[in-house]
Amino acid sequence: MPSEYAKSLGARLRAIRTQQGLSLHGVEEKSRGRWKAVVVGSYERGDRAVTVQKLAELADFYGVPVSELLPGGAAPSPLGPTPKLVIDLERLAQLPKEKAGALARYAATIQSQRGDYNGKVLSIRQEDLRSLAVIYDKSPAELTEELIGWGVLDAEARRAVETF
Image (cartoon, rainbow, N blue to C red; front, side, top):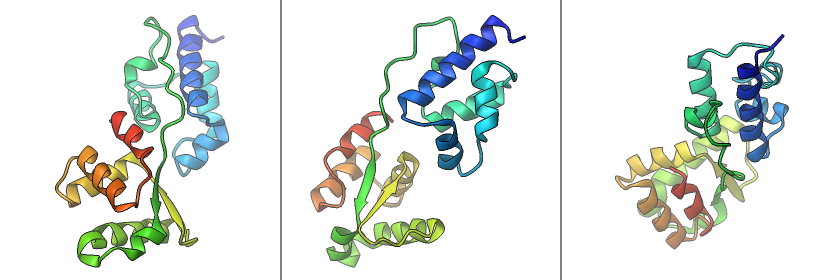
């Protein structure tokens, strides 16, 4: 029989997942099998104990502080879906290589890893934007503004940077 604490923790895990628009299977897909639907579901029901390490990893996966998952505080803040970072590959192809070559190589690598060659757009994660910012020697916010200026990212990408 799950404890009240385990049930409360599970309810917070479920709330964060659903706020991000993810089903249990969506978590498994998005994590590329790192987080199995059956395991996350058992954490959410309180049927399975979650270690501190796993809780920290799950919080990182969801992009929230661990404190958001722990019972006893305020209810989880409404997060809404994480804003999308979508690179316009057609626009990227029109840019000079000296300007956007690093971004083009990075995008091509992601496409290759995913087997995604539609050639029009490519969704990237916030972690990808952080890596690109290092490559371009800029902050994520500065790089986002530059990519918006190039027409490679939509202005909606600013919201994604605000969540860093």
